Length: 465
Image 1 (tube, rainbow, N blue to C red):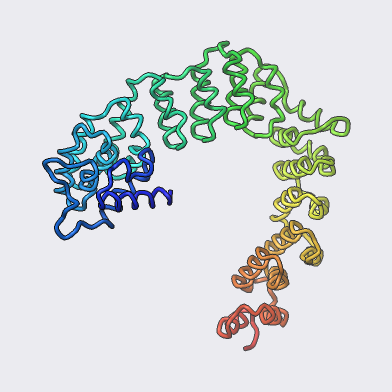
Image 2 (image 1 turned 120 degrees about the vertical axis):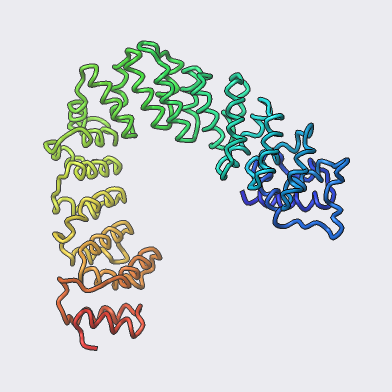
């Protein structure tokens, strides 16, 4: 984006020096270059004293008209619009002028654009019109493009459907879906391959809507089921029921994405299966077979508190991802055992420590603060130190101040910053003993306050000045 702005500004300078339009523009297909050119001419390029760079109105060149179309004087912009007929290279500036603040300029630009727009120009200038469309009164050019492209065939839209700009792809796919220009197989491929989540969701939903009962074949199902993005996979799993292939949904009950697992459970239930028992059986047999993280999450998503012992057993599973999902499952089922969860704060896997911390935060005061303070030591794993500080901060009061002061000089930049901010925001609460000498010592040791603020904090804590 920054290079496009620079290119636009440089193009303005070259045009003012007499360069040919096509040679002056680095990339005529980049909307940002045209927008930057308009801005640069308006705010940077100045006409010479005799106005020699202004058009020779009888026989103006494209370069002269380009500068005139961006001129700060609305009368010059309006006059230049009367000369653009038959000059396709200037159409990008006509599109920009369709959103001009001056009504006479805007009306003339819209008349010129209405005369010039074709399927080819609509495809070429749709990216620019989408940028201009967000401006006040900027919807005219894009509205006309939308109208023209709805009468075009599918092949004409291909450059927009595969455009590098995701906003352009969204516009093109939405139009193609509304006009029914893509087959279910084409929609499935777009849902599976496009990197933009909006396009994925739009095409996945359109694929399902286009399928009749029992009408899904491999050309539709396989791209969706094999897609990397969960929106497409979930649509593929849902389509299995319409295709009469519900048995394949069982294979997605342990998918890595929650939305896919939910769709798989729906399809399995509709075919008479019991997903909960499937999860329970496989999680209980974890010692005899490989267990995926999706199975553990699935059990937590549709199980109940009676499944807690199975999840506790999985907190010692060799795979750290499975252990983390098991702890997350216990938290989802609202199963709290402070003693057992506390032991997981020393787990070597950061994911397990994070999940255990999340589960313990609401019950931080049930933990031994001395035990947590020991885990702030520099030799401990970073995730354990972060967890201990988070729990001590949730503890509040004097315990929070002790922990924060202990880390004000820590070698870990992020922990040190977090601790200092905690000290600076600390205030004595009801559980802090009034007049506690320890509070004064900790505040002095922190060394983060000026004399006035330190005096006020000590006074709030009931200490004599």
